[in-house]
Length: 237
Ligand SMILES: *Cc1c(COP(=O)(O)O)cnc(C)c1O
Image 1 (cartoon, rainbow, N blue to C red):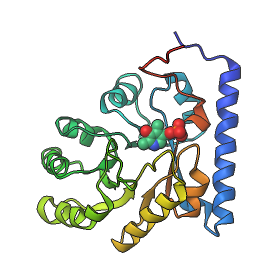
Image 2 (image 1 turned 135 degrees about the vertical axis):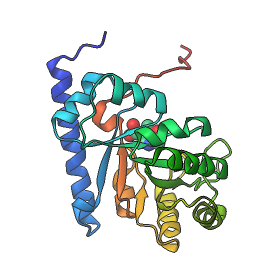
Image 3 (image 1 turned 180 degrees about the horizontal axis):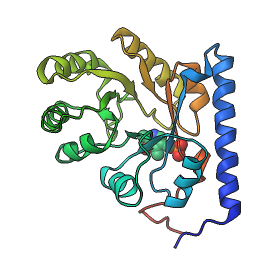
Image 4 (image 1 turned 45 degrees about the vertical axis):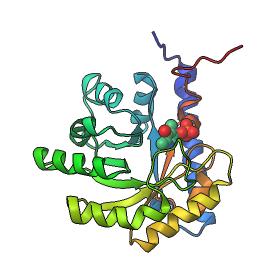
């Protein structure tokens, strides 16, 4: 069982305050209105108690990377407060598209034609239409999801024309071994070229850089909740 000692509660509260202060400072330094940057608290793998701490502090936007885990957490374990916004930030399999459409307010990981089709079908059946971001593989990494930058304009056009989906922004996860700013700059340029206003970029290690490059949503997990416990692949001693 996960216990929730007072020290954990106060450290999460402290971390959240620090992250918010850093977001505000980064926005001001970039001559931006701090209110133009939304903090998405990435609650994946976090215990119930930790999420309740930030809910209690007024945090309302949450990111989850797995549909099933998010369903359990936000519909089974607790009644989801009506004003909570849930954002899917992890890969979505087409066979989970209907569940994702039912649960999430925003799906940030639209990255292929077959998923666009599955989402369009699910939207039609359910009558719910979550807002959508396209994930871009800015570093063209083999193992990473996302539309390649060169394919993006065509992909967005096809999502609209063939599936009636309107995409409101872009999301990316830069390669770990390259300066993130290069990738944030590229994502911002791609968004501007396509008339898209929402830019989900920046995580615990680089959200200030992302804000400098125009992020409207930063996805922050460990800087708020502490390091996640590894789920699989135990490290060899
Ligand atoms: C886990 C995750 C985050 C949060 O990462 P931290 O480094 O813990 O802030 C952000 N975005 C995506 C897509 C993630 O999977």
